[in-house]
Image 1: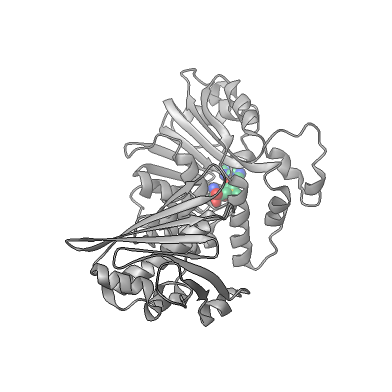
Image 2: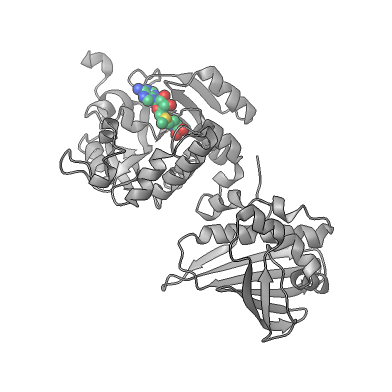
Length: 418
Ligand SMILES: C[S@@+](CC[C@H](N)C(=O)[O-])C[C@H]1O[C@@H](n2cnc3c(N)ncnc32)[C@H](O)[C@@H]1O
């Protein structure tokens, strides 16, 4: 699995909607060597998408033509941007504007080489700042390899997409191979959903976790690797032996135990689990008023946690009339989607749990849409869900996230109910 090679930069969003990015790097070369890499055309070729053409002096107007192979690969229409050199102070500060971005490079010599800070101030108010951050991160990877080894890989082959995930708020998920995820996902990216959920739960390596409706066990593998918990990976549709292959390949067979199980016949002892996690599955069975009482709550020890992320609604529909813009996509199964407030009431009125969090996962509809685009791209199918979500823009649909803790109230034993 891929590991990011350098620390993530910082994204600062200003109140007027503009942004600033800040990256720090330690380079092995001298400040003079780094300066050359930042400013000379034969060096820029290895780490920037464009050249800088014009005099190297403060106040000089320059142009920034994209390299031909970059233009071809990304279908760039404006192939030459205008720019200006703002600060030229070798070998410590180089600042230049291109398009609506000001790049400021500050170099400080240190005993091992040079500490480089890049600050990017952007007048762009686009919400896609994580893509820009991912792009600069990738460029700096190339720059570091250029200075440290003089042998960087070809710029045109560098791929910023996995950093987009990290900058979009999923730094743990960014460490997993995107091809592995897209091959095994069964709905919105399960790693992103699990990362978003687990960040709001208390998990540690002493715990036993039930991953209910785990599908192809990506969330189970993630929980075991990231938190050291033991996970029982239970699913109905996916064969436990297939999941074991995936679990073994991920190197966590000592901590993740696959089992074929139906959510109404879970073969575990009372209070066996410290936590139950359920990713994009609870709505298949958990909307039943009696499900928590009769099937799930008994498995969670006192004070244990229950966390779910499910496709949901911003607010409950007041009738069976579906918003007109969703009509062409709507399926009857979507009536199992509910709002955070609905789930909170549904769980709390049982008296069995106290809800600690009920919200929409931040930017959940966008992550769901991005997941569907990559999934349908992988399968070569039309992305109907992505079209639906793009048309809705988060007005109606989102990903509902709920975390609750088990109260002391006992459940009725199934044997007594039968
Ligand atoms: C959309 S998939 C999501 C799988 C996985 N959590 C993920 O996010 O990739 C829904 C999963 O719920 C499971 N499921 C649905 N009904 C179930 C039931 N009654 N008992 C156990 N699992 C169930 C299915 O087996 C399926 O793998």
